[in-house]
Length: 337
Image 1 (tube, one colour):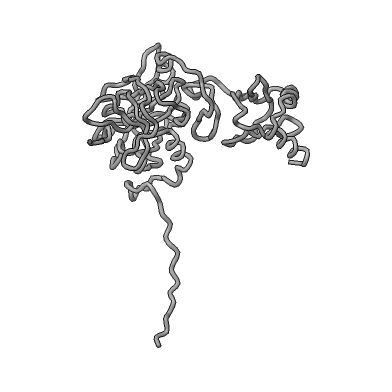
Image 2: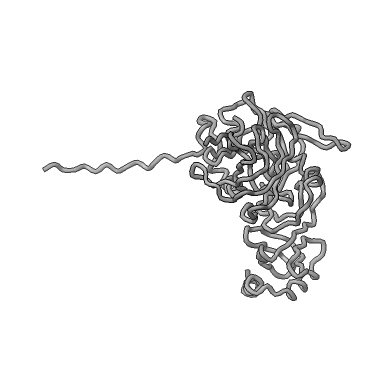
């Protein structure tokens, strides 16, 4: 069987925070919410809310200034975050609401979102899915933030120096294509087949982007769909189910899906029915149909969180790692007797 890539505080503050963290006292939170106006709003379970200034957003908690004290709100108690300066513009995610895990770089939702129909999702997500072209072939990709950073497969851009990205924008109900040729390789992970690119065109606008979901939250049999350009057929949407979450191939675990994956889909997103990325499509079995594979989104998050460790080195484009020189060894003289 042959598997092939698809393309080339003061004590009072501390006690209050710890009390919230351990016992989650809703009456206290509701009272605090009424004391601050024109600020961020954190929706909680049981229809409670906290209103204040978000000072820090950590993977497991939010730090919120409610005016006279600081609260630590556990992430697992939050259902939605509404910020005072949020603007519904092209710079917002293609699908929302979301939990902002890494506001400076990418967005992820740790909570289950309601399912929607594929047709309406595609209309929202369409602008965030792109084509990645090189002299040797065509792949797909998707934006993770408004500043032009996008994910694709490593094998799509491996060994290439001329990379262009084709972006589709909705105008009067139609998708118009725009090509950007100033594309920079930011980081690569050859072993997980991931690459982080950035559009560097001076006049590039802000881009629509997609939030990342969780492949861990998927169940076998759940519907999924892909958007890409298989065999050069632009903007193709295919749908299927998740066949298994733990298909082992060459020492790595992949998501297996019945969604049709073909050359040109490489680097494109695999979505759940909430419009969140749960995987990055990268290969199929050549002698069969409905046997496609995707890199779990948890690996993508790890790649992005540690992108400095995978920084692209221009002098060695095939090496996704940079190593420090080993310390010099102390030479001991042995007296001969």
